[in-house]
Each structure stands twice: as C-alpha cells, then as structure tokens.
Length: 536
Image 1 (cartoon, rainbow, N blue to C red):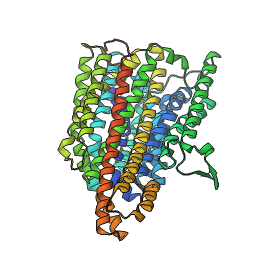
Image 2: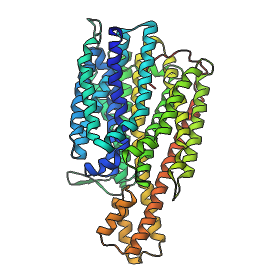
Image 3: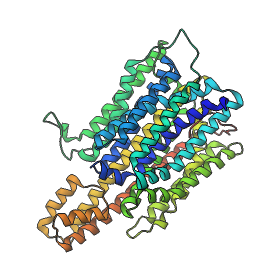
Image 4: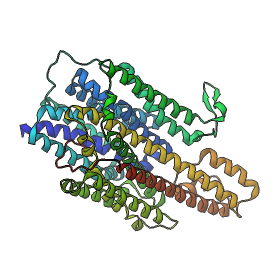
C-alpha cells in the first residue's frame, strides 16, 4: 500500500479538480437565486475559472522547474483550499468569482502541471504506465459522476457542502502529501520568466474577457459605450469586445516572439516555441482546443436547457445527464482497447462524426413542446466524445520526443483550458444574442401587443434580456401588473425565442465539431499501443 500512496494522493487531488466544474454546471439555477445574479453571471464565473487556468498553466509548469514540483503542488493545493472555502461561504457573485474562479483556478493551474512530474519521480516502467492509467480512469469517473454528486448536494443538502467536501478531501491530500517524492536537488534550476508570465496572463485573459464583454457591448458595433472613469470608450463606434480580443491576440503574439528570442539565446522561458514545429503537433493541439470548446459548451448548454425548459432541479439534471456520462465512460474504456487495432486519427474522425450526428439529432429535437425523452441523443454525443477522449491526448504526446513531452503537455493543457473558457463564453454570448433577436422579432410581429408598447418592450429586451424559466417570467409579469393577454403573448414569444437560442447554441457546437473533424484529417496515421500520459 505504501508503494501506491503517492498515486492515491495525486488521484484524489485530480478528482476534486475534475469534479469541480460539473458542480457549477448542474447548479446554475440555484446559484442564480442564492447569489442574487443571473445566468450570464454564472456563465461568466465558469469562463473566468477556465481563463485563469489557461493563462497560468504554463506558469505553473515552469514554476515547478524553478522551485520544485512538490513545493509547487503544495502551494497550489493550499490556494485551492482557500478558494473552495471562500466559494462555500459566497453570498454574492463577486465572492464566488474571487473564491472559485480565481483562487481555485490559480490552485488548479499550479497542481495540474506537477502531476506528471510527481508521478515520474515516484514510478517508472510498468508501474508508471499503471499510474497513468489510474489517473486517466479517475478523470473519466469524475466527469461521469460529477453531475450526480453535484446534483445530490445541491438538491438535498446545499451546493456549499459540495465545496466543503472538496475542502475535506484537499486537507486529506495535504496530510498525505508527505509521501510525494521531491525533485532531485539541482544547482542549475532555471530562472523564472516574469515577462513571459505577464504576457501570458494579459494575453489569454484579454481574449476570453473580450468575448464575455460582447454579451453586453456587442460583438462588433457598440450596443452601448464602455465607460472608464466616466469617460465613454467606443472608438469608431466599435464595441469594447473586438478591441479587447485584438489586444489579447497582440499580447499572445508578443509572448511567442519573446519566448522565441529567449530560446534562440538559450535562456530560460515559459516554453520553447520550437516544440510547436514538431510535425503534426499544431493540428493536434488545434483539434484538442476545439474538442474542449465543444465539451465545455455542451456541459453548459445541456444542463441549462433542462433547468429552464423543464425546470429540473440539480439532481434531476444530473440524472438526465447519466446517458451522456455513462456512454462517455464506457467508450473511453472501449476506445483505449481499440488503440492497438486501428489508427488513432481514424478513430478520432469516427468519434467526431458520431458527435456531429448526436448534436444534429439533439438540435432537431429542440422544439416547443419537447419532452425529456427526446434528448436521449445525448448518449450518442457521449459515445463519440468518449472515443475521442481515449485517443487524442495520447496521440498528441506521441508526436514529440520523450524530452519534449512535458513541454508539449504544458502547451496542450493551456489550449485545453482556453478551449473551455472560449467555448462557454462564445456559447453564452450567442445564446443571449439569439434570445434578444428572437424576442424583438416576436414582439414586432405580434398582433396582441399594442403598437405603442412595442418600442419600449423592444428597447427593454435589447438592454436587459436574460435566460430565465417560464415560471420566473410569469412571476415577473405578474409583479409588473401586465395585462393577462399580453402576458400570455410575451410568454409564448419568450419560450419560442429561448428555444431558438438553444438551437443556435447546438448549431455552433455542431459547426465546431465539424471543424475538429476536418482538422483531424491532418493528423498522422498512427496506432497507439500503450498509454503515454494521463488525462483525456
């Protein structure tokens, strides 16, 4: 048992990180009420969490080289514990963002890159392969059980106790961490790249924040001016969104130029850009980025659809996600067994094809009057995603030499989290835009709503429309003293527009999946006989 104590410790740590986001996804409706916010606010918290991880993942990997992997892991674990404590006590969206999105995100970004190093420090050969397999299984089980665990806590106890349970596990991990083997002492520890770290944080964060700002200020042209200290900022009538995204891309370009310069001068940096010159690595990471955007987008849209359309509680939502979760888990195991018989890129293409068929079936079934049973195609989506998960990360890491594995894994992890953040941000922005457009079209075409009331209603929709349930809308209309006929008409218009917004979201996910399938055509024909790394 002593031999595997380090594996148990790291698996527990990875489990709470994997399960964490699913708690938020199934608890959206309750969080909206308890934190006195709206769906957009919770969506922003989810995106910011992934954004923080994306911007700090490379930093976490480099920090482990500078101060040691065990120390970096422990610092990350302590920060994560403080964050989950603060999240459990949150009484506002701001407090939740600070605790969950920022502190937990920072902690996870320090812990994840050190997992592989700590496993390699303790195990080798067949033992290392077994350890990687266990960590991969933990990730799959966490993803499958997350909706159920989160739903149970939220419905029967409180979502706060889900975070408190994470804290208990984190404390257990902290006590067990003495079994982790530290890095060998070295006199030539690399220097930390402060300039690269700053460019990484500012660049990746600006891209994600720019997309989030589009919800309020518009994708391209400004719906309203952005205020800075009372001064309006809308250059040439542009929204702050494309300006911020453009600034982010500029910072990322500078990051790559800076890191290339350091590499050319044989100095220590966050990463070596030359690694991306490895044949097929760029399309591999691009596929991973898009796949994670699709996964995160689906896990945001599907629970939200269940909670707003059928008014499911968190537990019902978790149970409704079971066909997806179980099919994902089963196919992840089956797919791993297929690795020795079939080319990985062929399995990826088949996986994305199944995902596309599943999403198209879900999109076609989203109509007014839909029943929960018609969403069973989520299982088909899960099958495809499980097949993809069983192949993609191992294929990416098989493209590089053993010396480049840590470098490639760090870049892959960064783009994974960036895909998570951008996927949720884009989907949320698109849904609000589609909802607003559908509402305005419905109000304009209505023969029940008086002409003189249409303009103020349309203006109100454009300014403050949000995704809510039918019951919430009925309560708002009743509180406002609206005429019964107009209330019924507005409810019908809103329901239709909300359905359209979900269809638009699924259409975007389908497009992304098609893009990933096309990108997979550029990957090499290669059979993966054995697992090279954990994750998935």
